[in-house]
Image (cartoon, rainbow, N blue to C red):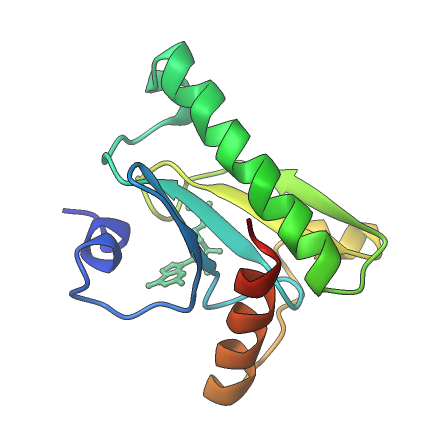
Length: 129
Ligand code: 5GP
């Protein structure tokens, strides 16, 4: 069982941003930038292109809605999108509010307190519709 399935099942906490029957979005615990969000299908699948085309498109549709909320809630130049999955073998889309190329490089990390994570997730969730 992946760590993200444990989050989906409520066994591990997360800073939730959005959810529907099939997808969940929560803040990355080790963010490149403030607001770095992961969008995850509840059905555990390893690689994004193992999803059916319908599942892939539905994931992107949900990610689009989360990105719109992110752009409203977090000051940034734009929202970057990346799919990697080398650390956690459960499909996830990284949505990252970016201001420069370094924000997409997974090298420079932001440290946030529990209160900051909570407030940030709430701010993004308010903009999600
Ligand atoms: P990837 O698999 O795409 O290389 O990276 C996995 C991402 O998941 C990383 O950015 C990492 O910080 C994040 N991550 C790993 N474990 C957890 C966790 O338990 N909770 C949250 N919110 N994020 C996690």
